[in-house]
Image (cartoon, rainbow, N blue to C red):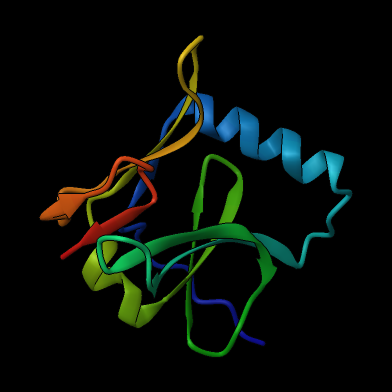
Length: 115
């Protein structure tokens, strides 16, 4: 499969990059794997974020952020352009967060939004 690298429509903070690289190493993934970012219908606000390691699919755009290959279906960029993925490591909150300027509404779980 041909890889055309495009400009990243999202950003990932340094803390999130560290955690993603740690997870990648722990799962002993191969170079053909990358981070899949996307959306799917559902959740209490209409859409859920999708994030996990996967292999490239035919409909994907491919980009690289700080050494992490990222896959995103072209159609999902409409909902995710400008989004920042962060990692929080506090007493009350621990995990990945999605700061999406396209979200008109989000729910308390932080993984569901409406556009």
